[in-house]
Image 1 (cartoon, rainbow, N blue to C red):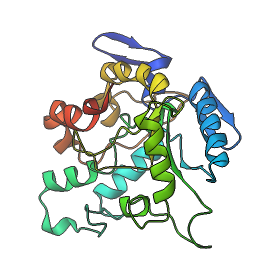
Image 2: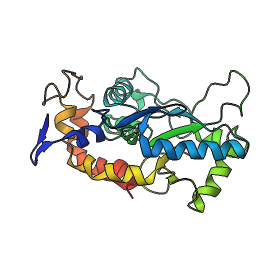
Image 3: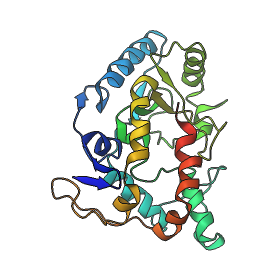
Length: 246
């Protein structure tokens, strides 16, 4: 069981950090997800189909271990890190702090990702681009002239009228430090309940592996760049995590 200064953190906090799958349902077209969010997404998929789109999930639930692997690989330079232009950037030209923030612009710290909750989904329409198209999840694909512009416009209209089955886009570029993600939909009624749980989570202890075995004897490597993250913890949480809570 995970503990912190406030006492024992239960299953709900483990869920919020992506360390437990308890309460998730495995549903067709959606995969592992919060059941209420998944049912809402299925309704949105049906409406999209009527409007001529094949709204599909490119990425949904992601556990702590998967997010940690992505983040650590980027910190070590083993996985590409992209700038806002869509071009890869190199670590050699940046300080450690700049490299960290370049990664945080597109990749959440493990334990803070909204994808841990089963309430958030990256979407696309696989019928829109040519056969063999490799999805990039870049804003250019969802903006004017991109293959997913029509789907984006349709969703934008629904969201603006609060008629998208409870979904909205948390990452619009209007607040915080995360780059705009027009593909990222969050089920607001379901996601809202996880926000305070992240604040109560013993994140630094988990990142440093000071808690040892967390659950079911699963161990994770320590967070790369923890020496850079820890002194900036409050500022990072404010800019990249709490800015998007509703």
